[in-house]
Length: 116
Image (cartoon, rainbow, N blue to C red; front, side):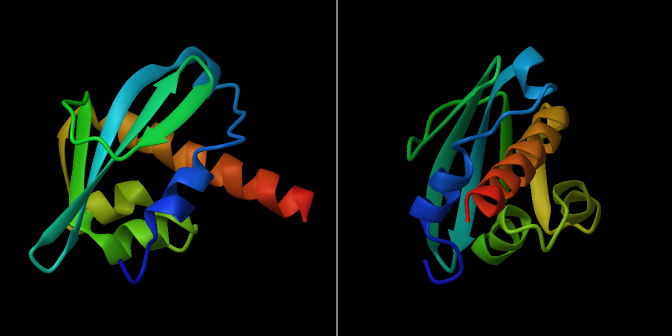
């Protein structure tokens, strides 16, 4: 994957500490398209705990789109909900979980910037 390495995506899920996340639980599977290839990343939020795996498993929310839009979402260059409204990301299931994922990325970026 050229625009978004799965390792970067997985790193963003670490160090997420947000009051809203402490009250949330659910799974979001990101289906990252790159030509004919599709990479699957499963983000699990469990009352403040966040983990990411490369499983293609059932999820409460499935977000599908080109890997480049997810790279922009993960780095803060794009907003997940705006991407849905523009049709760049298609969501099946509980769209609220995608909004929580946006918080995971934002919180993780803030923690990384603080550490550097």
